[in-house]
Figure 1 (tube, rainbow, N blue to C red):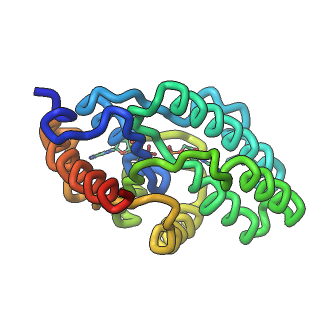
Figure 2 (spheres, rainbow, N blue to C red):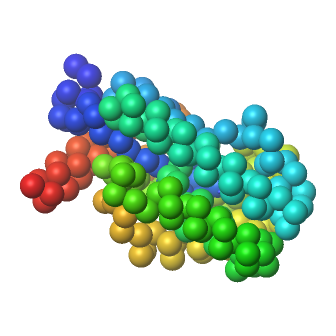
Length: 222
Ligand SMILES: Nc1ncnc2c1ncn2[C@@H]1O[C@H](COP(=O)(O)OP(=O)(O)O)[C@@H](O)[C@H]1O
Ligand SMILES: Nc1ncnc2c1ncn2[C@H]1C[C@H](O)[C@@H](COP(=O)(O)O)O1
């Protein structure tokens, strides 16, 4: 029996996976999409025309990269809407502004005027009643050491060449961000509490938690 039926997950649900770089979002996106027979929405990394340049020179490319990600995520949002849901999404649009753009502005690698332009574009596109929020945001959390090991193990050169302080700053910001995030319901999962790489069946307890969560929050909405 499909796990989706067993746990009564609505076929139109939209679940977004959030968390810092390297924490395991893409891996979780694939595992959940396979288990639930949902479609996936991934962010563009290999074909991203700005990412390498951005890591080589934050100041020069941070605005370009944010605008690129915003456009890509918005197109994905439209695709999800057109299919009528049933998606697992790798990273939420909220992290672009709440983590990345804010961090680069506050660290001085994005100018004030660029940040304001970006923020007003984000608000015009996202903070409207027409933008559907996900049914659930799964927040993956883990220790900085575990995450640094995963970044190294994955081996994207531009991330490995980035100073550890960058990932440390991001890790701290993620914790602060999730503690005040309220755009949609949040399910927090510690990366030490599952092992989907070695044991595919360990996704089932996660599906069960998702089911409890979605049913609870849908009941509250009624
Ligand atoms: N549950 C897990 N257990 C062990 N390693 C994992 C797990 N999830 C992801 N990884 C490894 O961590 C690295 C980063 O995972 P990835 O899913 O690409 O992270 P993200 O999408 O959050 O950047 C990859 O090398 C991946 O194989
Ligand atoms: N909005 C963003 N600003 C800067 N960098 C970003 C943004 N969104 C993603 N990224 C970077 C971080 C990683 O190097 C890659 C992919 O992210 P991952 O968490 O590994 O899926 O893009």
